[in-house]
Length: 127
Image (cartoon, rainbow, N blue to C red; front, side, top):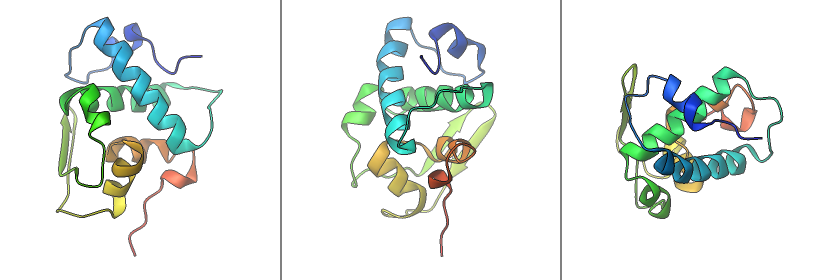
């Protein structure tokens, strides 16, 4: 079962446009990253979860498309994210907090926060 279809993606106000072919590629990577991050396949998908997937797809498009996932490494750090109704910025952390989530799984901080509803592993704690 797909987490999100192209038609569903179009209903979210991400401010990012893409073709169905672009969506198919980015969705594949987003789904793989989210499955890896959660460590399991979800069987019950609600609108909130679909919104998180849509954010992952949209932000990956804004950050280089498929190359975003190919370039995913400890040398690339998220310093900010922005879609119409959301923005996030952080100081230059290295391999801590949400940047570590991005480095290992390719998950954006807002998506990690949204996924925390489903799996405690997604909750970030800085001590």
